[in-house]
Length: 426
Image 1: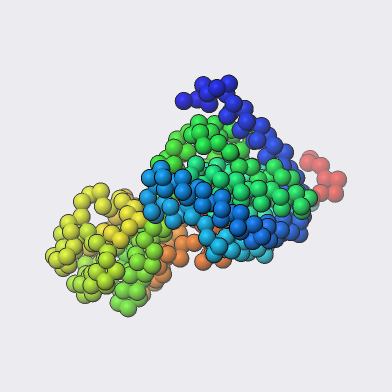
Image 2: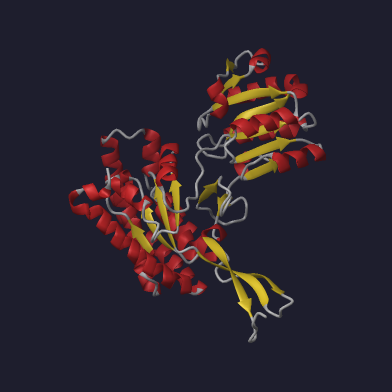
């Protein structure tokens, strides 16, 4: 249904007005000095802490309504705010305030034969829209990164967390005003009507970048209909390949950690590939370790022969992001077959090799097409904080304009700048 088909197109008209306000606010944010942006984030952190009782009360109403609507326990947990989680939000705002400001950075200045000097300056993107589900903390996290990078943001959270998101957005807007920055730099879409999402996807005249943070269905919807650039990843089918020349202790530690450290994250290993020469040595003890963690194994014929507890893997298993204690295992002839498997079934998120062979490691790094490629490290390190970005707004598996964990720099772009002294082209 088009927004224009709703009563008087009220949703579309309201979103358009909010978008124009965000566009105007983006100009103010692009000019904002680093200290003023940092002051706004520090003020927002203090206000969050001061308003903890109110935030808990508002969130309790969201949780009660979601429980009555039949939301499952995992989703309810993501929705729930606690005193500790609010404190973490405040700490996150202060952490972003401490990060280096990328805006205005000039790089690559060189003198040309004509006498002009050419370089690049890092500048904000403008207006960033974020569509997300469940977690109210995303309202603060996403807004803080957008603001520090000199952007305005339009936030559309899940309908189940509308009250909580609005309360957090109110805090952010009050802090912006207190710091002398435009309140419209943070806009929350205040309707639960799904038509609002479709309207946002058409607003390429005011939105410069759209970021979906949610399930595969949401990301696919945005990818199909958005008329502006989208920063996204559909899913994380991450692999660990244990090479012929892997160190056994490293292989065991990495393969166990990559699967069991957390199950519901996009950088969790979903498929383990093992070189045939090491399968008999490593798969039985790995299976025993996975068994202690309650991980269900689904394997190829050779895996099932070596691990009687493993279930036969179906074709769909190789392309499934389980987000659960389930792991598919395939024995491969060597690195070439591992690379072919990853090329066919991988999601371009994160893939790792365990090997002591420098040549194999270099081949894997060059040929695997993923946003993060690792040697002798768990896929669980694919994270903005672990990469030294301080924080991230998401992980991009696209190739333009940012790839991998996206922090402040990924929320900016570059423009060429030229210095002359009356130079003219002959």
